[in-house]
Length: 125
Image 1 (cartoon, rainbow, N blue to C red):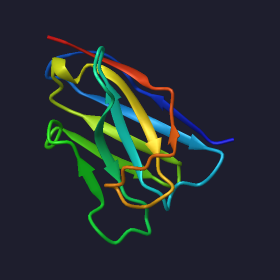
Image 2: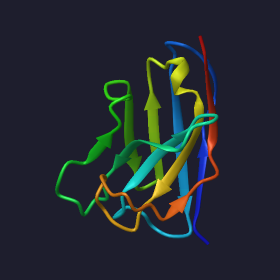
Image 3: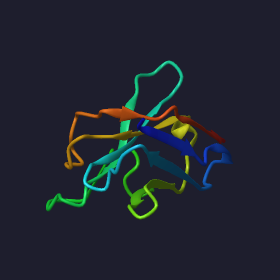
Image 4: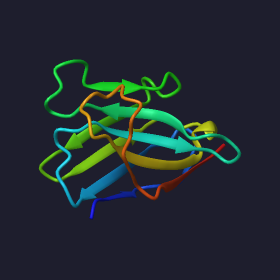
């Protein structure tokens, strides 16, 4: 059974940092794109960042404009884990953050096939 389990969320002051982790199990995702999404109260889920699978030869990462320069996505395939380093956090970053995996390798894919349960990030101003 495939599982994606997020951790690392919490309460942080504006300007602070958090690192989210997404541990995967049940299959190997090293060749697949992995992504982070978020959903704020009363809003639709939105894309945050994605990283390519190892078989992809194009650009390795993709970011939403709202987080470029502040968030960094990375992966450790040996640990089956994807990370989201979030710096210079703002109150508008408050949301539930979800990890997702695609059956493809391209980080700009719109097809995401597996989802985690989410982790809450709250940024106080």
